[in-house]
Amino acid sequence: MIKFVMLRHGESVWNKENRFTGWKDVGLSETGRAEAVRAGRALREAGFEFDRAYTSRLKRAIHTLDSVLVEMDCSWLPVTKAWQLNERHYGALTGLNKSETAAKHGEEQVKIWRRSYSTPPPPMSLDDPEHPSRDRRYADVPRQALPSCEALSHTVARVQPYWDQEIAPALRAGQRVLLAAHGNSIRAILKMLENISESDIVELNIPTAIPLEVTLTPDLKFVSRRYIGDEAMIQAAVAAVAQQGKAK
Image 1 (cartoon, rainbow, N blue to C red):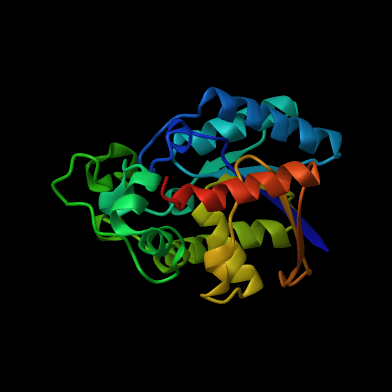
Image 2: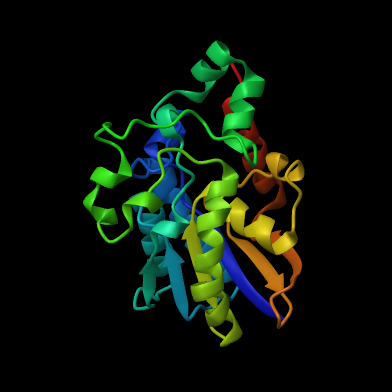
């Protein structure tokens, strides 16, 4: 069997403020930094070892991975930073408070924008200074590939080729992989691997900084997944993610 680990970044400053973050490059909160250290400790104590790591180009994922590797005493591991592993782009919702948006537009509409497979949020203007086409970290990315907004289906469309071309070959070659990314890029990978339906993926919530071990067959067919850590803490963290889009 082939095993690899995925990890959503620790709590960011905008997670703490319950804002739509997407491609906005927001740093970790104090809690998020502690979560990242705890995740690294959990992996070390469980006996995990890795040969290489992947992350996005957003610092909340990069810094989470850095802390995990420090805690595991393997900062020397090769790390690839891929824009394809970025969070889903929330378009014009970027920066808005989720609960306030739910109070204004209704919880069901916000759930669709946050979790639906095929319905994107309103797009970000191309003139917006926050548009990724204006960010030099994506200067090597074709302009037409940079989103103004995304549904999860669009996230899958950019994650899947990267998985097929980069991550899957590493796993087949016997490399032990750690991937530090985002709630929706991880949901995209799980949807691909598990063939989760468009309706069921709406209810899949990924908590911050809790390692998720995925087991695959030698031909990369899904077998199982499990979180590494205290079960009660894991369930509370998953429930907390689901509550973010509720009106208050």
